Every structure is written in structure tokens, then in C-alpha cells.
Image (cartoon, rainbow, N blue to C red; front, side, top):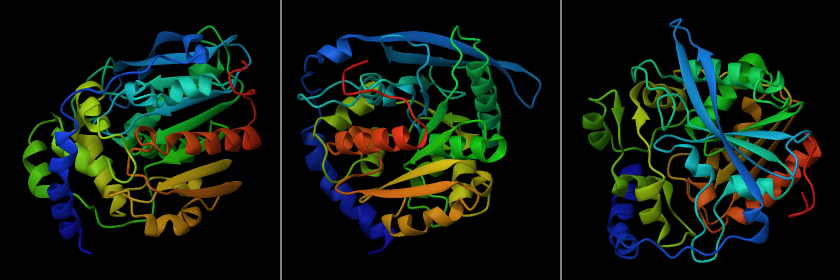
Length: 338
């Protein structure tokens, strides 16, 4: 099936999804463990290649004592902000990766990437994956040095989509994290399954918002709550820097480096069966794009579209990610025990 055929069929089926998504879904009460999760805002000052200083905002999530925990630094994808990692419960189903991991003994730092959310907003063409990687490198250094009040000995980078590109580039260049979790991204070059007739006009602006109907098509397939796209497009959406979007497209086409060949240490690659942007057919070859890694584990999540965290299959995969981090980096505790 051609890309355009898939796209047209997605539009035909979209009306049914939107008809169920117009009203925001009811939110369930949080679990006892989630009520015990502490959140704290933090801001990092970073000096970037233009010799200017910028602010990167983020939010810590943890339960119990922060000291001594393995830290997961979570990096959102394009058209999102840090809230991708802390979505609300819907119809009794949990969608907050940050609170899930906090309940299992980890600390999570969910960042607003440069140009997004509460972080500084330079010219959109300045914000590229290499620039983001420089910012992330300085953030990891600050976390290890205790500049946020706690020194983290072990750190795992966890990315989604363009956030995965940022994490791969940083680790492949600096290798200052202890592990790398990649979701919603493939290094293997492949055609970009996007209707550029839609994105072309959007890219006339240095920052642009992707229309909600387009986000729904790109990000959702398989098993998801019909109310989730409406909630997503109202509460989780963020703008996309043009420079980052252009760089990401170049990387997918094999025209711009990701530096995955420089990544050392363990890597987990999570691919989604129905990902419109990252073909599941390429999953088997992703390990070869990390030739210097100490180990590469690849897993396919069935019944899932691009946004792993926001599908009904998320909890099973989060459990697998938890086990992988425990086995390869350490940390954690029994469910709800820390």
C-alpha cells in the first residue's frame, strides 16, 4: 500500500475518531502511589553554539527520597512538551509515564525542549538536533554535579520521536548517560510518510503548530481510547521549531547524521506496529545502526501507533522498559514500594 493510500484511508476513518473525541473524557482519580509522587520545577542555564545563554525548563517526579535514585531524563517529540510524559488518567487508564516510573522507584526529569513550553525560544531555525544535544549535554553535567541539590550517579536518556533523535545525538557525541531508551524513532533511512502539501505552508513560520486532525492521523492507530486525541490536541500540544523539523526529516532520509554509530552502553529501541512515521518493517535492522553499543534490545509493541505513551498498550510496554532499565542500569523498587 502506498503512503498516499494509507494517508487517504486515515482521513476517511478520522471522522469516526473525531466524532468520539470532541468532548474531553472523564478523568479517574489517581492511585494512592500517584498521590505520593512529588513534583518540582527546575530550570537549567545552558550556553549554546551562538554563545548566548538560554533557559531549559523541566519537572522532576519522584516518590520517597530523591537521593540515590536512578534518574530518567525524558525528552518529548515534535508538537509536544513535557506533558507528554505526564498525561492525565482517562477512563481509569494511566497515561503518566513519569508517575508510573516514580511509583517504581525511579526519578524522572521531563524537559521542555529548547523553543518549547517554558523553555527559551530562540529563532526556530537555530533549534536543531545538534544544538539540542549540546543543551542536553550541559543538563546531564549539571545533574551529575549536584547543581539541582541532588547528585545523580546513574542517568538514562528516554526519548520519544524527535526527542529520541536528540537523545541519540547527545549520547553518540558525548556518551555521558548510562543507558538509552528510544521510542518513536528509527535511524534506518526511509521515505518520510508526510503530506508535504500540508507541511509546506506551515513551514513558512520559524515555529508552527501542527493541525489537530493531522496530529491524530500521524500519532494514533490501533488500540487507543477514542477520547485521547481530543484531550491530546487540547492539553498536550506544543509548537515545532522549523530547524528541528527540517533536521529530523533530513535524518530520516539519511541526509543528516544522528551519530547513532557513536553510542556506547546499552540501548533499548521500542518500535510500534502501526507507526505511520517509523515503519515497523525496519525494526529488525535498527540494532545495526548502533555498532558501538554494548547491547541493543529491540522490541515491537503490537496494536500501537506512533505515540506509545498515549495508547492502551502503554502499561505493558512501560513494564518492559522498567525491567530493561533495572537489568542494564539498575535502580527501581517493587511497584508502589518507594
